[in-house]
Image 1: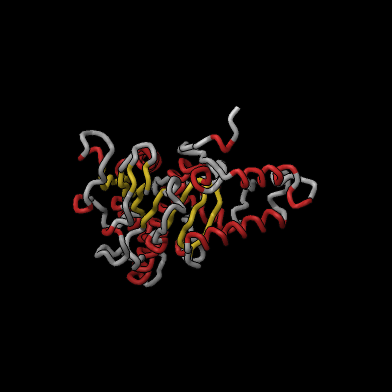
Image 2: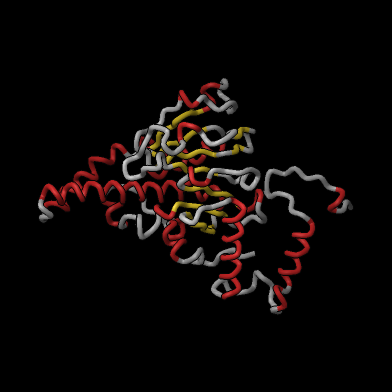
Length: 313
């Protein structure tokens, strides 16, 4: 039987962990910090669990140089769960932002009368035709993310910015040149997968046309396009310009540790008190999907990632 030192492992994920880490984790699973209980047996509501969460957030902020105006969330559901969560939350943010703008204009023109509320709802319903989720499809993972958005919100609200199969004989390969991208003017988000493991496609860097101040300002967001990226397979492998993103996410099983945990890094401007998800009644009135609480970023942030029992180990 081979020992760990005899094995050279190149699995895509779960990834190989250092032997010292595995041995330390094994000890913690039996008896964590001489408490007589394993780390997986302690209450997720305990001070110990809170300390682990806060220390992990601080470590990630240090390693990734995450600015103070970003929040770090720990969630379940893997990267695939975030296909839905990102769409849910950024559509909600778009509705909240657009509704606020329309309501302000309607109140001013109606003298803040009773008609302002009716006018703002009608205006919001009219604006729905402009709701777009932009996807840059460069491999199987971004393709699945776009398909999930279509499933939740309908193809009329999903814009495929680029599909690399169109320029690679029906297969995923070279990323189409940015000059050919069909970006929406006010997309609720622009989504891409930074490294497509299955298809062997990685962005060499942050797309120039999505950089802040690249000539495509989004009203209400002076920093430019609302960019979201799946970084599950290359997080911590290189320096990333976190400030260029509104949100990034990554599963722990690739470069961080064991499966069962997904990390979301999101700008605090998309969380209360700056931005709150619209009431469920409003979303239903607009014919839009309402996210489960477990996928609502503001709920997870409010509870320091402990809305439900978190996988601490």
